[in-house]
Image (cartoon, rainbow, N blue to C red):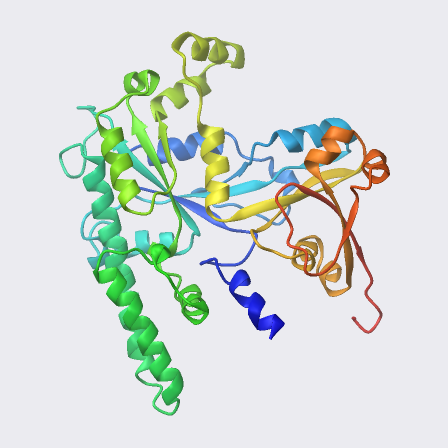
Length: 387
């Protein structure tokens, strides 16, 4: 009974339960997706920190900015340091009718299926030299088209699974459950409700995580403004976008000006700083990265010492043995305990010995849920029989 009571807490998240998750840049053609992606590529982590991870041309691995990580590096002065990373995928523009194969159609939707979250780039700037596929500027209508296409593809995926379930004649109980669950998913989608906003029980979540539906993926909205609107922090489209997003789940919105960001990247650092002060605006690329990282339910803990300071990313809700397994599978198999310091206490007290002296250095067992920013040392033992 106690184990069953804990299950709902462990099954609250949709999506792949892993640490190597990706977020895709999505939007209609000519909204600024690829330029944004190229800017993020300039923030890519040096490849030597991540062996055996060849990234394709349309993928960028960018470091997650974090003052905590910087402080640990300054404090321990390690031989090497490895930040947390966000994998970003540039996905080709979507057009009306993509679910029926229009434009790049199925390839586009397959690319979204392969990521775990979405940056929706909305065009809220006018430029006669940059055409819009719908021959007008209306970011809210663009969002409606995109989500209608995603829901249409999800309905198609659910229908396919229902057809497969109908063949389970020799498993009547399993067949009935599968058809009932798919019926609920389809009804929600046909009513215009994205899967991630539905209320699902544990069995339904298990099936959804198998189906990997497109509208189950969390979203962050990036509103691409003109430089004038971005600097003055005002646009006729922002209130409309905020209202639409509020009515459709209330996920994060970040105003951005891709041309402004590109201008900053072409300047030397001191010149860019001076320009930002003059116009009263700054880059939001760091905010986009950290928001995207959180959106796909990733957190990280630190290991810190004179040899290395490293961020180890895990899915939110992971317990100590799972976290240990990200370092090495033996750590999880032979888990004994996790010795945990809270970053805030370590910074306040100044050193590991001071944390111990203050009684703040805690030993945690296998049921400890790791928190973002924990500084952890794991104890483990694996016998020759593979305990």
